[in-house]
Image (cartoon, rainbow over all chains, first blue to last red; front, side, top):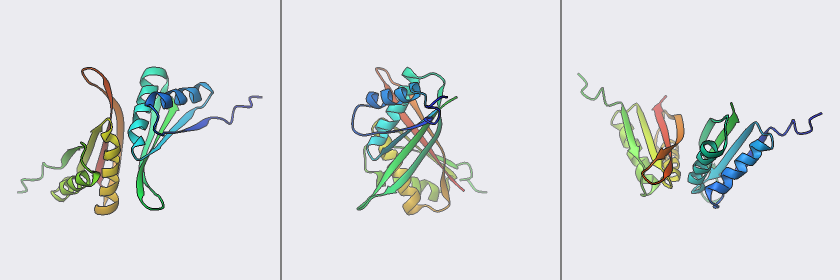
Length: 91
Length: 91
C-alpha cells in the first residue's frame, strides 16, 4: 500500500527570496511524487513566480508543463492586490 | 466603408510606469475599436502587467475577458528573462 498516493498536489507560495529558491522547492515537490504543483504569488512577487516557474521547467524538470495560469484580484483589508496561480503538471 | 475595420488588435508594452497608466492605455485601445488587446511584459514589469490587466477589467471595461495567458522565457544577449503575454478580448 502506497501511503503517499494521496500526496499528488502541492502548493508553493512565493515570497521575496530569489526565484531559484522557489524553483528548487517546485522540483522537490515533483521529486516527492506530486503530479501537480501550484505556484501562488501576490503583488510584486508575481514576477518572481514566473521566474521560478520558468527556471524549474527549463532547467530542472522533464515531463512537466504549464497546465493553467490564472490571474485575479484578491481583496485585502485595506486594498486590492493582484495575484497569480500557475499550475504545473506532469504530462 | 469602415477604414478602421482592420485595427482589431493592439499591443500594450508594460514598462516601469504606474499600472493605472497602462490600464488606461488598454481601455483606450478597446474604445478605439480593438477586439483584442495584448499586454506584454518582461522581468519585474510582469507584476505591473497583471495589475494593469486587473484594473482595466475590474474598474473600466465591460464585456472584456482574459482569453489567454502565456508565460515564457526570452533569450536576451547576456541573460534569459521571463515574460508574460495577457490576451484580453471582447466577449
